[in-house]
Image 1: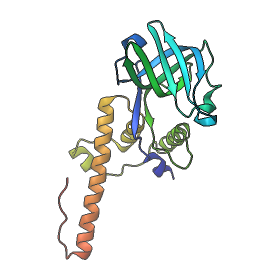
Image 2: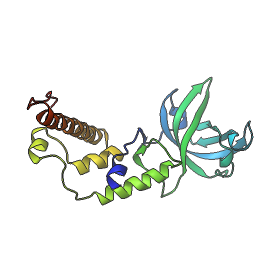
Image 3: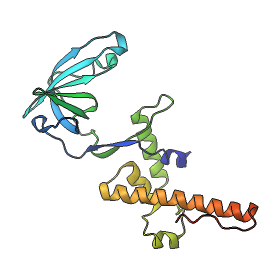
Image 4: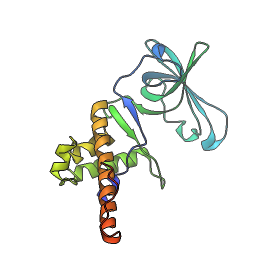
Length: 212
């Protein structure tokens, strides 16, 4: 169902708008780094559970990138090629390490902007869900509003199409806040309406608790 796909909201986001230099990384921060692979070193473990460590560099310095349960990734990286990595960084005793980041080859097809991270189920990958969501959003373009125009105007809400687009792929922090507010408002509006209808049907006409 198209509506169900569009309502499968991200659990987090990766901000791929601005890359940081390795030398500027701070301990415990999440960051995007563009770097060239110098060394690919298989680690401990066997099969798919084996770890994988990369040594990468940019013009400012070097860092290690460590992947867990990465036996299947042994041939994913080529020495001398440039990649982008997004993940949490540890800076300790002058050594910088990024643990199990998301990654992509640095080319014209690499994602940019603020991108979603979805809860996974049924063996689906992030790529699968992103493709399905993009198709769903495209199908919903031009669909009618789900709230009365008077409610949208009085509450100063953005359109539902804008909300769905920016909850999945925010143009920025302001647009994300507007989208989130619209979707939360709509959820409580529908809940309040359902309570009132239930009261009118089964409760002798007593009104529901006013939420909005």
